[in-house]
Image 1 (cartoon, helix red, strand yellow):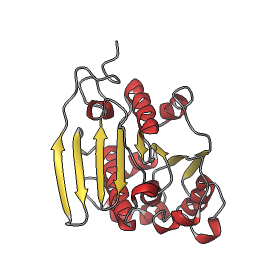
Image 2 (cartoon, helix red, strand yellow):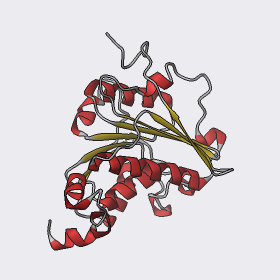
Image 3 (tube, one colour):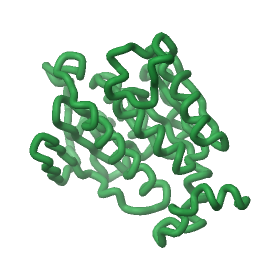
Length: 246
């Protein structure tokens, strides 16, 4: 690493669990971020600042005024822009040494695999289960680590899946599409709750990239109204429609 690089990441490098070797792993990594909204905003900002060498941002939506309350990567001048374009501008300002690739189409089961295949890790922060299921299946098929998060009102949840042969996946927890899976636009969201869960996602991501245990197969449940964080251990479902196919 050059002197400027060492200085930029010096506070991370001084951590015994990271060091120069761990920082180099971060720099050499590629992370796919599905959704650059309330969760994807803090995720992308922190991963860019931490030095993830290649961020792939996937979002087909544009910035709206109602997004700005929680989607902190975007600003008022960005209204009407593609979220990926707005996010890329912000990330390259924070850290011009990283590479940012944008994907502005809605990925399907037929189009997501090439992007997942490029990634060392996939983070999902969309607001619908169909997208989560598609992303989960692609990560299962490619054995790519996958971190999923969701927020609503004062609550958040976070799960990290290793996607090895014997590990659980998202559909071990949610075998079918929930009948009433409402979004933030329907339920509302306290702005910092998205920031809390996105920051936890980014923390877990960096732990994975440097080789630390992110407590795979654990469901973290946040209730910000009473500031309670619970953890539940997840088990592999032997009848899972995603990771037990064939």
